[in-house]
Amino acid sequence: MIATLVQLLLLAATLVLAFYFLTNRRKARAKAGVKLGFVLFIIAAVWAVLRPDDLTVLANWLGVDRGTDLLLYVVVIAFLFTTMSTWIRFREQELRYARLARAVALQSPVLPAHEAADEETASK
Image (cartoon, rainbow, N blue to C red; front, side, top):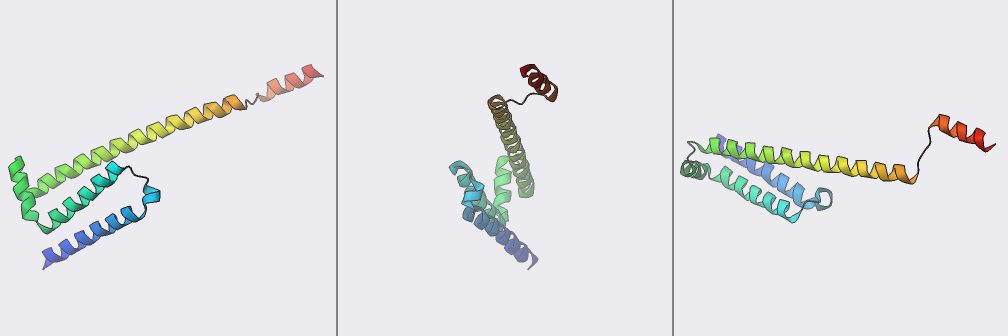
């Protein structure tokens, strides 16, 4: 009974995430590969919730004792991938902002206050 309730809650959470991701396409702006990976992740999540014994069989086939251990390893790898991806994206964005700031600075230079005052007195 409890296992069925947990399965229902996990399936509901997975479906809510899938619905949110697929309906907010403009906000996500994800590439096709990311969307395909997310759909595969959803399918794997549903499969692991509905058939946990299959996960244990797969884990044993891969040389891991339990399915939960395999799941933990996959989650750690996914977390590392997400962290690295986010770090790279922020670094690229920071570089773009620096280039933009340089371009704006070159288009409209502002003289320091003491140089501007010297130029005004020199032109009079």
